Each structure stands twice: as C-alpha cells, then as structure tokens.
Length: 629
Image (cartoon, rainbow, N blue to C red; front, side):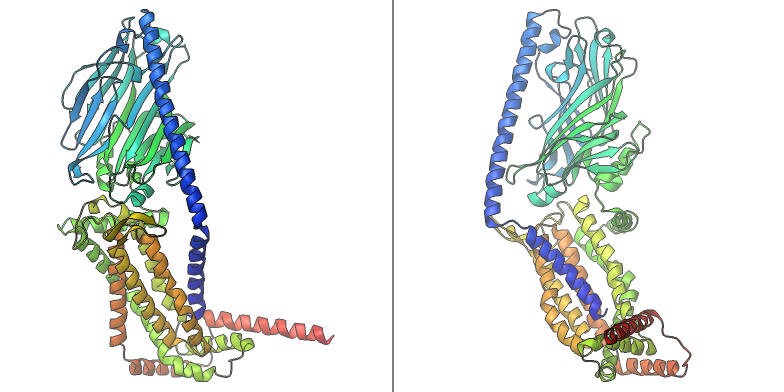
C-alpha cells in the first residue's frame, strides 16, 4: 500500500469524522430538541388520551344505541364479561379475550426476560390490540365492541363466536401449532344480507406499543422496526429513527411484522393485504420501557356469504434464522414467505456472506457445545487462517519495499523538487518492476477482510444465540458490558463505559501504530516525513469508533478486539520470521534476471505512470511552445 492509497483512506476517514461532527447538534439544538421532544411527547400523550376517550365514547354510544334498539344485529353480543382463554405449548403461551375475540397477550416461554425471569412477554392487553371491522349496509361490525362465546376450548384450539339476532354469527377460529405459529380464520355465517353485493374486503387495525426487552435501549431501538414483505418482492421497513404516521405502502403485501431486536410478531394473510396499507412507527423515549408505537391499517379478502373464511397465520417467536425457516414450513398457505428476513444480515453482498458462510460456520461451531465467547474466538481464528496467505503476501510485499528503501532513496534523491514528483514516482515504479515488487498487493488483504468485518457487524448484533450468554466478565454478549454507569446522559458517550469497546479501541490504536510504522519504514524521501504528519489522523479513527461502538453489543466489540489482536500478533510474527538479508538477495537475483532481459516491457502501474508522465511532458511542451509564440 503506497502513500497515495493511505492518503485516500485517511481522507475517507476524515470525511466520515467531519460529516459525523458536522451533523452533531449544538448544545442549543440539543436543548431545543429536548423541549421539542417533550412537547411532541405531551402532544402524543394527549392525542392518545383523546383517542382512548373517543373510543370509549364511541363504544358507549354504540352500546347505548344497541340497548335502545333491540333490533340491532349484535344486540346480545354488546353485553357480557371479559374472560381470558389460554392456548399454550412448550414454546408459547397465548391469551385470548372474549371481549373482542382476539389475541391479547403473548409470552415466549423458553427465553429469559430483561429481569432474568423465564418467559418474555411480547405484548399484553394494555399495549396491543387487533380489531377486525366489517362494513354493513346499515351498521358496521367491529370485533372490539363485541363479546364472544368460547367453544372447542383446549390447549391448542378455541372458537370465538359472536351471535347475531338474525341467527347468523361471526366466528374467529384459532389453532396453535406445535411451536410459534398460530393459525386462525374469520368467518361470517348467515350474514350475507347485511352487506352490499360488491362487498369483498374487511379492514384490520393492529396496534402495539413495543416493549423494551434488552438492557441497551438505544441499541435495541435501532433494530426494532415495522417490517413488511411485498407480494412479488423483498422486505422493507419503516425508518428506525424518524416518526412515521399512516405511511402509505402502495404494494400488495404477504405479511406485516412488529419486530424487536430478537423477537417478532408477524401477521400473515393467505389472500394478501391489499395495496395502500397505512403503517405507523413512532419512536418512544428512553426510560419509558417501550421502544416504538407500531400500527398497521390493512385490508384483505372477505367472503360475505361465509363459504370461504378469511385465513391468517401469526408468527410469535424469536428472530432465529434457522428456526424461522423450519416454522415457515408449517405454513399452509403455499407462499414463499421469507420470514427469515426478520433476521437482519446486512445489505446484499454482506447478507450473502452471512447467509452462506457465517451462518454455517456459526452452526457448526455451536454444535460442538462451545460457549458463545469461544465460538467468536474460533470464528476469528478460522477467518485469520483463511486470509493468512493473502496477509502474508501483503506483508512480504511491504517487506520487499522496506529492504529496497535505501536503494530507492539513492536512485530518486535527484527528484526532490515538487515539480519532479511525477518523475520520482515513475522511477520508483520502474525500480519496483525491475525487482519484481508490486506495491498495490499490500492493499489486497484489507479489501478482502473489509467485507468480512462489515458482515460480522451485521451478523453479531442480530444473533439471538448470544442473548443472555455470559463470557468472562461479560454478563450478556448481546448488549454492552459497562464497567462504569451513571444516571446522566453524556453527549457522544451515553450513560456508561463499555469495557469491550475500550479494548477494541485500544487494540485499534496498537494495530494502527504497527501498520503506520511498517508503512513509514518503506517510504522514500519526503514520504516518510509526510507519514509522520498523517499519524495523528490515523489515530482519530479509534476515537471515532469509541463514540460509535460504546452502545453496541459486547459480542461485536469482543470480536473486533480479538480480530485486531490476532492481526497484530500475525504482523509481529511475520516481522520476526522475515530475514531481510535473504529477502534482499532474492530481490537482487530478480533484478539481475530482468536486467539480462532488456526486451521485457514495463507493465502494470509502472507502465501507466510512465504513460501519464509522457502525457504530462507533452502537455508542458505544448504550453511552452504557445508561450513562445
């Protein structure tokens, strides 16, 4: 890697740092934003209270109207008692309410919650509502207003029936599968006369105030999204950070999911959700115990005759790639649901790496019963072993440039003037070519390893296998590992210091120092002085990483720390085992071989630089001729 390449990387780093700094708000802006957030929160609270009051008033009005009109279709179903009905298996426990007839609470049994108790409450009746609405010619049927009678009750089945005064009924039939998949139907019996002849769609409103399930609010909030799957396309999601209210999604959808970092509730329609669904995602305040307010207003097919029920499935479980793939096979809809997309593995290139390499490697290592910390170490060692030949080749290229440095200094000392830099570069490339050295080969390992680093950046934070897993001093590899915590929020740092983040940044400084020293040892003339000036810039990168990664999972920081530690160890080992005298002798032999072959043409970068030099000289000659005229 030559000086220009290093300058390029430094400039990229400076642009990133400068952009991050430029976009950070001032103290006044932070205070204004805080006040604005407080106002927005108050407005949302008032709006929520008003909505609840309006809803209560609407229900009271509907019940009063029904009581005053004994001819109302669901007169008897507007009165009753709310009772819980529980369906359960070894994986989940689902509670249904006879008021509304829908699921009101979901507990994932085989995972610990944030308080170390078994059972993660995905949602409950206070925060989640699912409402089915049918528009009749004279009156609307709204399931939230109705009391249902349960029948066919077992651990895995329940049928909820709301009886109509005309002898018809609205039936919600539920069947829980063997693990995380719930099958259910909505069917109207004997009610076709109350609907318009062309009525073919029902409305669904689904709302949930997503609970904070992990210790790190900022990190979990970043990975909690309202996600949906297009019928003939991929998945998409609403912004994780900005507020979206009734955002229109124009595509037809297979499913909609309210997704936390490690757990999801996904609603799937056999007959699709019609285009122009309205989606809502409102980020919540830290300390509220909640992440986002999710909402979905959907439409799907409905048969008023009751011959064909509207069919749905719900996935209520962990974001585990392999597990979701197995559960998806239990679906009876015959669709390619791609529910495993709930596990974020990165953008296409990095997703391919994680999907077809990291996942298999992770599964193989975990099958041996290793702890998750050991698995991360073994993954690091295997990746280092795979990339070692390229790393060695890169190092040997740098070592060759280092042992040739005295010769290059001597050969290019006459080109120290600024206007002679092109000639100097041309002479250096020519000498490198004669000695059989390729300066660009030093960049290859970095280019190869960078996609792996980014792939792991996406994989580790979303690996539910790391959740609640301890290793050494780390209590939970899926969240930060604080050595110091405080109540106030400090800009850029938060309310804690993460030990693995500090180790990662310190190892990054060490590795940067070793890399810079290696580069400096091979620089010629003024380049070495320029390298000294760039050192402090290179050390800014670990500082930037500290502010970025202090909130990240300790598992990711630990992986990066171990990776850099082994990279530094490999570099040190190669340096100790390289005999500079033998290497120089081999280069001299290559030089003599090329010298004895005068017909050999310059190629590669040296040839391009030579062509550029000739073009520059020709342009300079033309300018001088014009000046003479």
